[in-house]
Image (cartoon, rainbow, N blue to C red; front, side, top):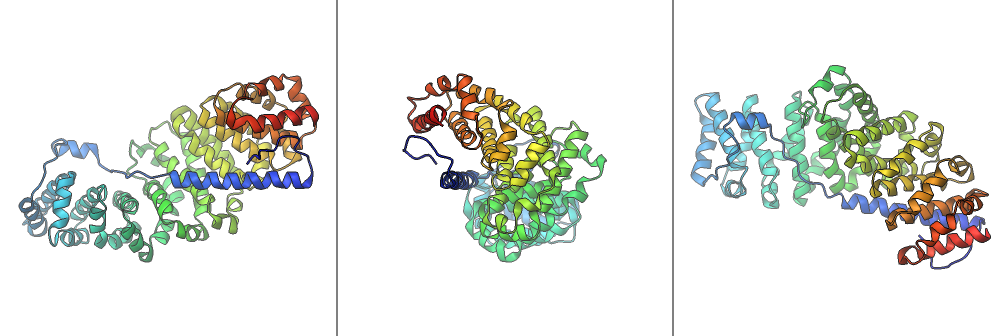
Length: 463
């Protein structure tokens, strides 16, 4: 973003546009890199209470003969309980990679499992789905691809009425999407994108009853739309060509409504586990906003309601007190909202949210970089915005961040200063009066920062 040329960055129209263009290019590259780096891990959904009731977590490796016998009993057992127990034993065996390999090599095994998944007996359906879920968690793509015959049924059951079953199908699909290109190619024509979009739209209705928050536990069993967020993260990561379809079907608007519901929920309850719902929704919104399609259809405009911004800050406070490691997720969404949207930058100012944002600078270097990036987004919008930033708490805050040794934090602080010097008359002089030049001199010998430091020194002294 910074050229090797030292000297004064003049406030000409060309200089302003050049600076804006460089910032946009850099921000777009950063958003793309972050999305591509979000390698989503698989999720394993197990009910610990059920595991203990079944006799602990000892996993037994099953051979071909044992697998055949369990499948036979599951299909033709004389009693439903006997058939269910056979599937439970098979499921526990499938927790071991060696059993998984044996299972997929066995002719007709997947066909039998799919037959049980589509039976008219709910308990057998559920256990068959749990067996498929264990297979989906395998690190071998061949195991995931063996599950291809089940994907159309898993998608169909997303429109069912059992929240437990919907959740299990969502997690299983999410795991399969991560593992195999063949699965992704098959799911697209089968309609995974509209199916997920429909699941998202269940959110506000499912979460609105206040009593519902009491059911949230360490893994939220009664939140299929929360699971949909978990499934959407790998979906959006790997099915990028269809993000436009999700956006045009109103995913941004619906996720924005979920954000409002979650902000209300964290104010009503102290229950642990809400972060497991919040994080996927925030991350999905962030990823969708990085897509070109979001700008084409006016993505930020679909979320222009100031309540979205207020809700996000409620969630940032929730993260700060309950799960500080998730703060970067919320701040990255804030960055994506403000990057190309003057209206969101205006809302930050009108809702007096700049000061709460500055208070987050003390959390960590990672958080500091994101906070400073958001402030750069605001400052980049021009003189009217910079007037609301400077000096206030920002001047002493920047002097503090310049005293740090982290080059990313310092570099982002320098970028913010450059924007302020460009747009806010008197900013450079006020900076000098507060020993700003000495603060810059600390970083003169840092290779990554030299050009920026020298440019700012020249601007401060001669601008």
